[in-house]
Image 1 (cartoon, helix red, strand yellow):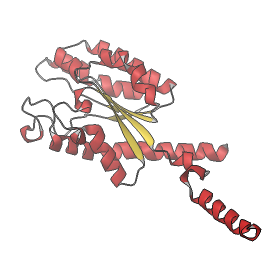
Image 2 (cartoon, rainbow, N blue to C red):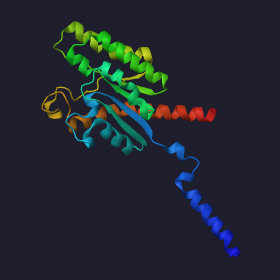
Image 3 (cartoon, rainbow, N blue to C red):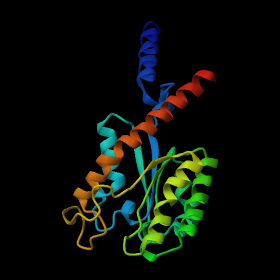
Image 4 (tube, rainbow, N blue to C red):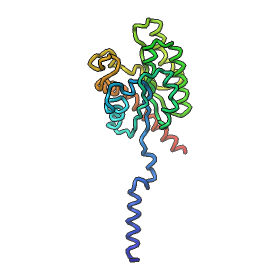
Length: 224
């Protein structure tokens, strides 16, 4: 029996070396967590889970070779105030990157753009304090509320991006708004094809942030 011990020991060492739990770099391969934080446009009103923005974005990123998990932090009907109120809950999964999409319901309800700004400002401050990279997804006001309102509302998102130094995707519904074939019967919420186009258009912005985050972490690891 004794003569077999070196062989058994070598075999055990090989098994441990091949085991994912024994790999020193295993923690480094954990997926990047992306929080899609928003209203029904994120949550996926009227859509199957596989058709929602977070699910389609996750698939698109994985097809490009990115190891990610996209968390659905959408809640239908949320205003910016409601989003701010549930931010602690949304951050429980400790995301690395957040796509902030809120404001559509503020615009539909004619909420003062100043209030929209203050709520989003508070959200962005909290995300910055948590060290979370942000992509701010802009929204445009309904065009039936008058020039003064639409001008003030539309300016909220570029101003916030500049103040906080975060990346801005100017209009979350770019290419989809007002196109019946890409929206559900209510004319407001995208259908699966509409979401696919939204993902296609926002994807380069998300990839740039993922790459920048990876580069930053690599530099920190090298310095450490």
